[in-house]
Length: 329
Image (cartoon, rainbow, N blue to C red):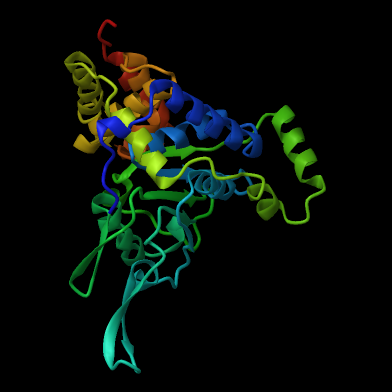
């Protein structure tokens, strides 16, 4: 595992802002019409968290993951989740070598810097669970031996919300390991026209678009930016504000299961990343609120009554957030 950068290795605020602006510009030139989704993806990178991207087919979920991986450099792996995928296909397994007459470990695609888990809900629970350990602990246990994955390590998972045949619900324990669940929606008319024009002359849409993105950071650069994000100041009042929002989900009418302690950490780390992207070395309440719904929507469950009434999780969360008094800046 790569050592964390020391304070003397961290970039300056100006260097960080320049790198992040270049990264954002590069991604928005390819993933057209989704600036908020791109911003949330960068927040996940800076916060050291994993990202779930949900949307109907054709909205550039996979393209975003591929382009982000190219920009960040390091090793990229993609796993197409299917019903017959086995846990060993993800983590690896021990295999017998006839020549040496010994067992040797074959490392799976999870040993990388950026892992695209495409259509993650198409694999059964036992296969999804293969990611539980590595998403939390950044290591994989094979035949009793713990093997660390490269640092940084980021899981970008995609899923389709409208298809249910041949899909499986993700267990709550795995959902909780994602920093954010991002919803990607249809672009506006102007952006859609640009997308159509850009792709009209391309022979292979995804490959051609992904090839237009170059490597902007190294794994060491990503670690350095994360280290700088962790230096963003959070005072006690702001931490209490984030915890207050999370705890409110546990008693709110219409919510049967509220968010756990990981949600509070997600709110604060997202706030630090947001502040860094805005060029500040301190976080404010608006940084907590900006991505709060994305950090919480996959960590709550509505009651049956609320669902029957047509309530949506995001709307309920918006009311929860607005009910909490933000500290003065």
